[in-house]
Amino acid sequence: QVQLVQSGAEVKKPGASVKVSCKTSGYTFTSYGISWVRQAPGQGLEWMGRIRVYSGDTNYAQKFQGRVTMTTDTSTTTAYMELRRLRSDDTAVYYCSRDATGFDNWGQGSLVIVSS
Amino acid sequence: ENVLTQSPGTLSVSPGEEATLSCRASQSVSNNYLAWYQQKPGQAPRLLMYGASSRATGIPDRFSGSGSGTDFTLTISRLEPEDFAVYYCHQYGSSQDTFGQGTKVEIK
Image (tube, rainbow over all chains, first blue to last red; front, side):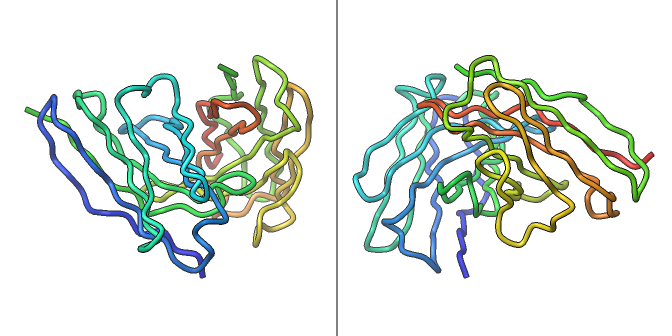
């Protein structure tokens, strides 16, 4: 079955960077994109961007342009999302999702806390 | 950016009744690339509908989606106890995906 398993919780200081991983299995990794979505505490869902695994092409939400990088490692079928220059309002659960017609499978989420 | 506005913010419904959720886009959604998700506390979202009206794998037929252009609806007929959750719409028809702010369906 399709699975996306994310890395664990992280606590970071303002100004630092975080890199979240998303290990996939159960499907052909290069046939789908991966999107990243975050959710601040008690808030709604926010799309951060996507990577088309086959080509490596990325498309980032304008809000995160210049601060986020999405990559994949096809040898390990793992996707990564790095967010730089963290601020307190980046505290959120970060999800990876398989990008099909809609986001049809999701990781369990990775909590990132930004605090001094 | 295509802003999605969901209404109502909270919907109070009794089990067995029908719930109708609205999602309005500020611009026409290309190819009706509109999805709906259900999210329960502490869980990742779950895809319910895609392409405005196609049910995702394993979704019961009491969930249905309709609409086109800028106005979309998710209908849940005969609400079951497990259907009380937050629902989000999501448009993926442009280069910048967006989500609605969510509708909470609570037990009346």
